[in-house]
Image (cartoon, rainbow, N blue to C red):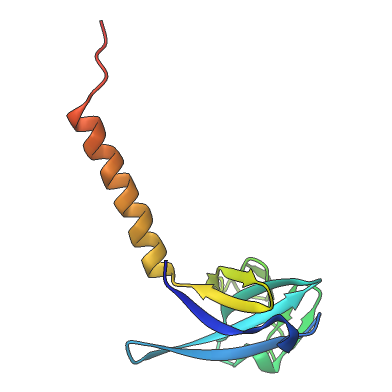
Length: 133
């Protein structure tokens, strides 16, 4: 599984957030990483309303608040909490913690591995179907 090193746990104190950019085939991904009660979460860093950089906003417990218009998302899931109109959820990313290191898992590679396992399973079923009487 492909992972990207994004920093150290000691770089993000509890209740704080940072942002990083990952250059993935020249398509920069702007990602926000937050520490909520000692657990680390990652979402896209761009507001789905007007494109504000969310790391300039506030983090109150698990609520990420947009600096421009006050939209609120749950940083632990990326889901919208509050805004006068319905906005898209933020993309969330899996954070892996090993010792003091933080990694993001590459979602494309992860999906590919899951699909590969499903295909292998289906091939086995086709080759050895269960016989019913």
